[in-house]
Structure formats: structure tokens, C-alpha cells
Length: 160
Image (cartoon, rainbow, N blue to C red; front, side, top):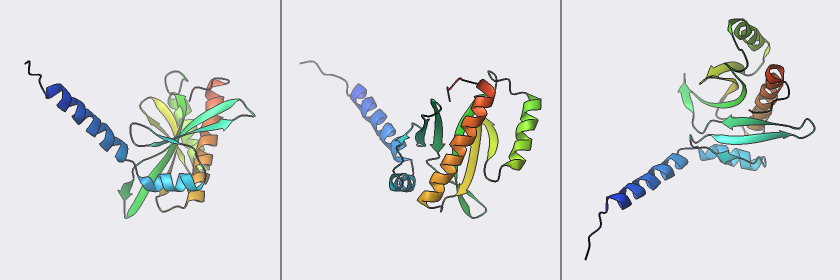
């Protein structure tokens, strides 16, 4: 009788456990608030809540994310709502355009333009104790602001 190694099975079980732990890393309080507002979402591999806005009258969609975790700053528990608007290289975001975005930040009453990983995002940082309606309102603002900027940069392209 041939003996088989248990190593492949153990590796598979370890991988499945890691996937399950990563999926559990998201904060269920966000799901509760999104569910209360009837928002459809998925949880991505980072534990962030991914929402696709559909602007059917314009024939456009817009991605939006609600961070699956919070950060503590000065006694506040902060959650980020963020939506991509442009690819820095493709859309020619240089120093001049970056200064224009900083000027726009001054005009925004909530949220600001940020970059990460070669992508321009509109980001709203909220105290995590906002209610479901306030969270949804922040999501709406971030998605619309990012989509408007995407139109400015890429015209008819609808990739983000």
C-alpha cells in the first residue's frame, strides 16, 4: 500500500484558513449600515466593501469602496470612503494638475483628492460612528465627485 504525503492537504487547508480569516477581517458594522440602506456590495480581497454606482442616464458606472477597517487618530475611529477617478500616468496628472487638485480640495466641504498606487482617488474620512444614512450620503458624494473628475480627464472612457 502506497503512503501519500499529507503535506499537500495541509497546505490546502492552511490556504483556505487564510482566505477565511482575510474575509473575516472586514468590519460587519459596515455591512449592517449598507444593508439598512439597501446598498448592494461585495467584499474584496482587502476586506473593503465594493459598490458599483450605475448612472444609467449617462451610461456610466463608478466604483466606490468603504474601508473594511478603521484607523484610530486622536481618539477618533476613522473610516475611509474612496472612489477612483484617474490613472496618474495615462491621464497626464503632472505637477500643474496636482496643484489644481489641491485648489479643488479647498473648495470641497467634505473629502479630498489623494493618490495611491498610480491612481487618483476622491477620499472622504469619516468618524466611524456615522449612521447608515450619513455613510450612504458620503458614498454618494465620493462616487459622484470621482465620476465627474473621471469625465474631465478621460472624456467618454468609463474604466474606473
